[in-house]
Length: 295
Image (cartoon, rainbow, N blue to C red; front, side, top):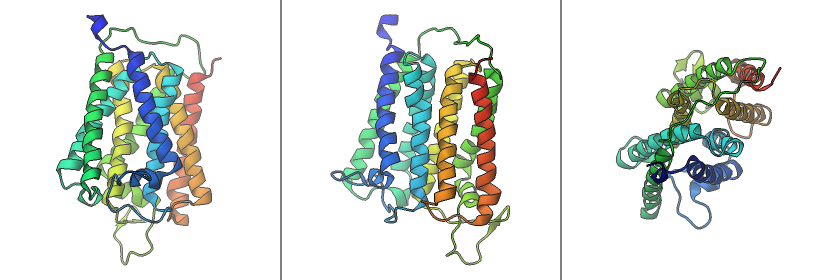
């Protein structure tokens, strides 16, 4: 029976290549990626013409998640079945989210306006189904928990619990309350008499921004669900991947605060949201690094 089951190495390489290609496109040219490049029709409708729109920040945020959640961990341990649990969960959630995008009016203003654009989504959803089956089959091997017995400054159990708690809060907010979350970090001076939330002006967000926000949230939670499926809270690969993810996102957010490539952020938001987030992320980085540094 084992000879008929896909090996984790095969599934992990497939997933890493796919995530690597997507993350590279989103990191380097997020606007062009969403527009489908030079020779394809756009993936979305109503893509902003301004390159400093915050939706492109969300696309790059997503890219760092794919790098830290899949690509780098695969380079560290390409035979890990734990990665198969994570990626199988991600594929399953992604298929459901794609179907909602295609078959409902939840993101009606973000849908592509051409048949070719819609066809691209159908193809990618089918491809996700194939990747899901391959990754699921690679998850069916019996395996012992991967434990790092070397003594570190903080146990990986504590480090991983801290990361799961920290990331899950943001994951849930990205999914169930993207408008409230983005309003804490972004502003829109064109609004007259906006509603308030915790002292922040509630901004209007587009269906495209809502789509990417929920993509981010579902990826975060799927990575954590994969850890639960592994039933090994001491999983060292989760610690390493999380350290890469939080470190790169913290540098990305610091760049956003200092350089302001994406509009618009008020000084109040910097003091009340961005800087506290950077501080909390720095603490999590310290905890994760302590879980990987040996005494």
